[in-house]
Length: 249
Length: 342
Image (cartoon, rainbow over all chains, first blue to last red):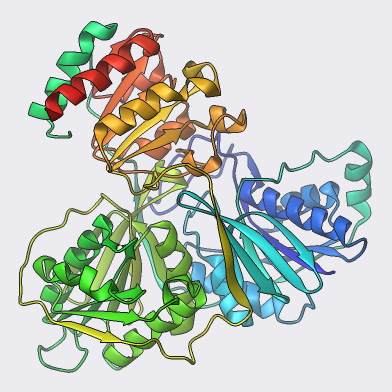
């Protein structure tokens, strides 16, 4: 079984985000970049599915600046077989990103295309199902676990109040969320092996962007609050304020 | 689409300024977030001199359940209904919405950023070949041009984004935009789904209840979140009791630490690797307030923190704080809330 995993290079979630002087982007100096945390779940899911199928290839695809090679190498170190980088500058316009990825993937013979459920920078949560539409594949989103048997992928999706079971006929696509998959740590051997695995870089076929970020702003600071008191004695005053001042309950 | 952005939109011209609001009915009940979507659609349509259509997809009776949207500005409520269509899958739902937009030449289509809206909206965008803004917290329309505010980096920054295309698709974060009444005569239409718009290769095969939340944390108007200060997963009863006291619109949330520890499901996680929420009221119980958690809840309207540590960063963003043993304080809050209810 051949599995493609689309990953994105994003700032580490512990990063303090600073708005650049131009006002329409974020400061990149001193920022630690990593593979998206949800993309790691997708890589782990792909590796487990390939292992269960006792064969097949896990190939990584990313669209981003040349430095994205590092994130791809970390996926190769986890166990993926090869990687392709579409060098370019993705924007907040997920529809443009989806067309760039789909143009490449249409030439791949992947039984499954996996994505993280969202990228933690643009937070648009849309590229996976858009790519699936472009490729004409079924797509299950927010999948916490899946297995494949006889050409059918059985997925468990995180929905309100439980898990929905979805069956898809391959070829298919899915976006992976936190659940069953605990991303493996790359072993030293894996890291060494990753250096020799194929990583192809080519220019992205970038699509026209229709969402323009005009400005970034910090959210307004919350006004300083007040400590109402200590212990359960303060509860009555809290509830009175919530009812009478804030009308929140 | 024939018209250009900036063309204003003459009233009467078919589709000139029409806006589609995609409403949701769950368990026979219209979701609260749908009122906000219709109300936002009304504002756009008024600016463009157009009409608002609300569409609801699902089982027979869905349109009837959504007929109250006329009060919030829907000129027409269209139900695309059939037995089993509620579970037909997101591809079929997206196909029905995309066909509605094509047929009505809607200039904009708005969704709720609920789990279902997040699942369906990107597919509609791809079918219509237009971009999508997710999780919008404010919309500003000036002439033909629409700008949206949406959080990025889990709310660490707010982005002002302009859509330069002819058609705007956006999902609105629940609770962020308020619904304003704009009543008109209810007009309800019902039609069956087009059999051509199916979910090929996709089948909903079952549901495994977790016994968890009824309202998703991203949609709840009140969130009761617990962190490491809860000490152990078996202690969540005190938070469930407070949630129950606060009523049906309340949901449980969790910090990353307790999700990572396996105490609570990831579906409840608030923060950068979880959900970003904008409830009217947010309780942070035993949560110290790591930067990635604060990013996920800082747009809550009122924040209450209960923590044993008076120096916990959460008190810096809380409107009200109580320092103390949460196992004493939280039951006291629940009791005081129940007294109000009478």
